[in-house]
Amino acid sequence: MAGFGRNKGKKEERVKVSKDSYKKASRLFKYLKPYSFLIIVGMILLFLSTGATMVFPKLLGNLVDATDNSAASAQLEQSWLNLEHIDSVAILLLILFGVQAVFSFFRVYVFNYITEKVLANVRQDTYKHLIRLPMAFFSQRRVGELNSRIAADISALQGTLTVTIAEFLRQIIIIIGGVVLLFISQPKLTLIMMGSLPVIVIIAVFFGRFIKKLSKQTQDEVANSNVIVEETLTGISNVKAFANELFEFTRYKKNTEEIRKIAMKGATWRGLFVSFIIFSVFGAIVFIIWNGVHMRANGDIEMGQLVEFIVYSVFIGAAFGSIPDMYATIQKTVGATENLMDILEEEPEAIAMEHVAPIAIEGHVGFNNVSFAYPSRQESQVLNNISFEVKPGNQIAIVGPSGAGKSTIVSLLLRFYDPTSGTITIDGQANTTYDLSALRNQMAVVPQEVLLFGGSIRENIAYGNPDATEEEIIAAAQKANAHDFVESFPDKYDTLVGERGIQLSGGQRQRVAIARAVLKNPAILILDEATSSLDSESERLVQEALELLMQNRTSFVIAHRLSTIKSADQILVIDKGMLKESGTHDELMAKEGGIYRNLSSLQFKGQATEA
View (cartoon, one colour):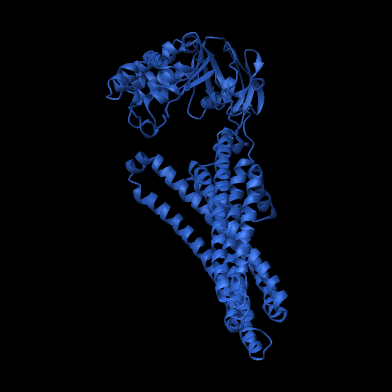
């Protein structure tokens, strides 16, 4: 629930519009640069197809005039290029339509080709950047929102880059070209038409800015609705267990209603703008035609010239009428691009997206006066001056009350975060001196809640080493006590585990995770309460596999059941972010009034009561 308030508080910040929005959107040009030649070709085709359109009114006027001159032209030498002959003009019009069709086809094809290439690159770069961002970024974002940025925001670019921008430029060319041609042929009527342009342009700019704010706000609310769906479906078992279907639906309904209200507000203003444009532009056209008819009656203009002027005016009016909606679409796309660029501007971890040379480490770990506070809660110190040393191959257990900082120690070891102060060393070197990917390749985690990907058991085990052979995968499963249950399935290693591994039991998921860790063959192993949620039989099988896995490698075990760590080489007792006790099981049990001894006594009493 805290997440709802956080997003609500940031709402005003999201919809704020500034020049920086356009600056961020301009970063898309780097994706267009490799296709500069094709863009030039597309623009040439755009100009040619639009130019062919602009010739049409001129030929139409000639066709009308040819009707009046048909008797006189019959006495002239005939040729198909004689623009005073009806058939010649008709043939030219057909040729014109054919040429325009060809140019238009290749223009659409070229711009679509460029767009799909650019969008593929944007999607790849966004995803590549996203998965390299530090855990601090993901701790302050919701999965549904990030998914919306990759899906909805990038999709918003598709229509704009494919159609809208090209059509926008085409309409601009029609307006400018049409006005120039009209001014050359009929300056008086053109000046009358141009009188309304400044007012329309000023209103267009005003409306455009306002509509952009509403469009960006709509985009943000859509992202929030995706967050709700993501959270609900991910935790669907909890939703049903607490009978909160109505609550979740109400939450989603409230959000979608907000989307509808903002979208309808934007649609209302866009409708008003378009209506104003239509009324103003076409009202001006009627007034111009009225003047033209009077000029024709006075003999100041030929009939063909009047028809030519009317058609050009209709073209220009239609172009003006379509520009506001296209401009609003471009504004909306700028808003979506701004959100996308916000992600791309986040500082990623120093991870090379290529295979790195493996490093050999013994697993000698040292924490030296390490203190830490999460970036989102700087005022709350999670660890205070923690110091300990782990020799290679030793098993270290970390115990303590919930919220004491046990999992934070693991997060620092994996370099999900770096200490606020103090240093962490691996084999005597600061962990920051190692290549991050190479360092993490020497570590493996078996968590309490195992996340399996929705593929097969084989794919989930091979996640520990994607290059592993079938024999290595089976050997890892055997060491993890997983091979027998996998073989009992009809599809064996091709069995699909379902979303988040839902088709497997808790013990089976744990053993697949252990097999994954076995296949990785790490120097440092991290077990985060790996058996705390299992039944007795599953715990026995998992514990056997873990003991085999921990042999001859440095192991960190976050333990809830103290009975599982009696043989640990060293036990660290963490309380309120501080290291309160350390030693073997026997040494800690010998301390009168010690935290570990009290915890052990409480668990023993609890087990005796259950028995």
